[in-house]
Image (cartoon, rainbow, N blue to C red):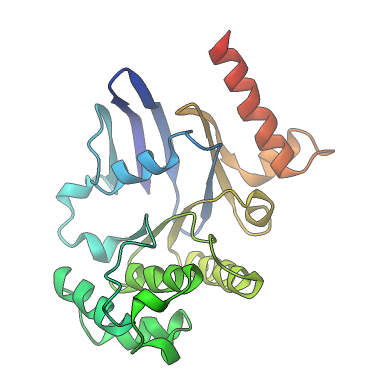
Length: 240
C-alpha cells in the first residue's frame, strides 16, 4: 500500500500541490488525471524524492522513499522519457542504470525483450523516436523487478500498436500483484483498463475512487467528459 498524506508544495506564492491525500493499492492500475498545471508531475516527483514537499509525506508500506534500502527494487519510475544520453546505445543506457542502482546486469536483455527493443539494442538513443524512448525508459523502470510502476504520460509518442502494448503490459503487471500509478491525458484509453482514478485540479484532490464510481456519477457521459466537468467545477469555485 502506498499512502500519500497531505502533500503540499509551493514555488514562491504559487501552490502547485495543495494538501493532497490518497492511497494506491497493489494489484490495481490507478490513473492520475487532471488538466495541465494540476500538479500531477510535481506530485510524482515528490513521491520519488526528486522534490521535497513543504508539508506531508509519502510512505511505501510505512517507509518513506528515502528510507527504502533498494528503491529501484521497490519503485520503477518514468517521469521524463527524454532523460537519456543520446550517444549511448539502448543496451549501454540500461547497463549504466543497472550499475548506478546496483542491479543485476543480466536483467538488461530481459527487459529489452519485454519492451520490444531487442532489434534496437545496439542503436544509439539519439536516433530513437519518442515512442522508442518511452519503451526504453519503461525498460529502465523494470530493471529492478519493482513492486510499483510510476509512469508520467507514458503513452506520449506511442502509435496505436504501442498503446495497445502499454495497456497489456500495465494490466499484466498489476495482475501479478504490482501497483501501477500512471498519469495520462488519454482519458478515454485509461477508461479501458484502469481500476481506480485519482483526479486533481489546481493542485487539489477532486476524487480518489474506483473507476466504476466515477462513471456512475453520470452514466450518460464519457469518462473524459466527467473528468473535465469535475475539474472545471473546481476551477470555478477557486476563482469565485
